[in-house]
Length: 429
Ligand code: NSS
Image 1 (cartoon, rainbow, N blue to C red):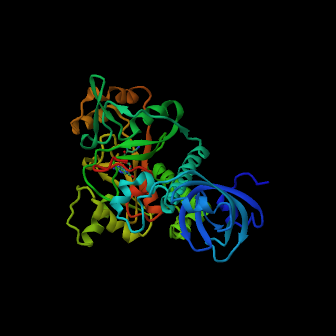
Image 2 (cartoon, rainbow, N blue to C red):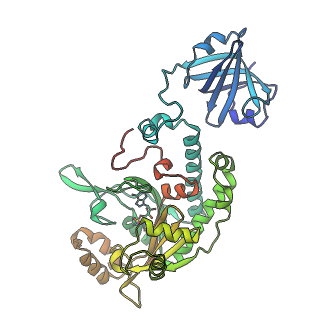
Image 3 (cartoon, rainbow, N blue to C red):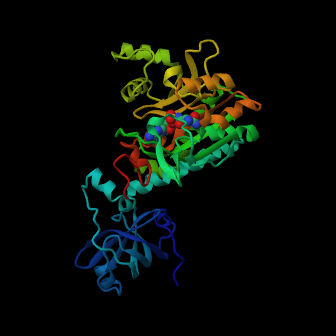
């Protein structure tokens, strides 16, 4: 009698030694000698060596089985120091469920080719590990907000007015109307705080990013939160608490994955609040000292962000920006209307991972700001209404999931952090 299907991980943990087991998965590697065929079988939890002897009834099937064929393997678990992971299955029965044609991915493929066959490359150990950590990360993000009594809400994807400026809006035909794909749920979250006070969402955002950089996608997952009766300070605290929480949780609970990905777990466990904070003006001073040709009032580019982040070597905030480089909804500084109460969170290598701050809650000032940005008041009537009926100080932020993961896992490119990346040139598969 065979046990029911078990996971490779259970075998590698030494919980099945001497037992008859059944494993199902895909053939990851295959090596053949005169007397033995070694099949390395992969399931979602790991890989295990399966040996088929020439005198076994499974020999013929093993000979025919190809790399990436799906299989059901039955046999006895043996301890064997030579096997990767220290255990192997002495195969008694092998069934090929789906025979694979010659698998196109072999060793030493270019990044570009691996993206062309991302639907197959997702089976690699590296992508499997990244996807597992991504799943855990999302779980802990939800956990964080739920523990703080934030209510999860579901914003629309079709929108009629821009949140983050026209340049990166994707337009689309909506029956006979022109609409856009959402860039941010923020304006909708703002509407929801009037009933729920503290809300958050995890949803896709779309940006028509024409530049090809290692940190820009055209479709990314956006964690956004909005809260009533608070300002920029409270928002920075919420953000640093969130980032610290998920770093610790992932560090504690994904050790195996982090080790396999060569990520130093201490980088995550050592994250602690409060994060350093500098003003935009201080950032400009520091950059000038470093020899950057940048003047007060100009936006920070990727190079500037990276230089500042390298100096800190850990997450930090830049806050209180000139009004002209931040969005129309940012609240003006009460003492200096040339500034807005907006804050970015930056991390080494990636730069900005969140933007947030206080929102303009005064109707007249908001209308002025819309005009300043050349936006049509008519398109924002509903948003202006929020300041008309019981306006309230409030603040929020948006965090890019892929950018956070890129930093946490030392990924070279944000495209590695999402299963099917979309960029200006990449929309297949
Ligand atoms: O444009 S943001 O800086 N800010 C907003 O959208 C606000 N409306 C969010 C809010 O306050 N609710 O984008 C926020 C974050 C940014 O810091 C990045 O981490 C990420 O979203 N982001 C991106 N990730 C990947 N690719 C692209 N193109 C991208 N754009 C923004």
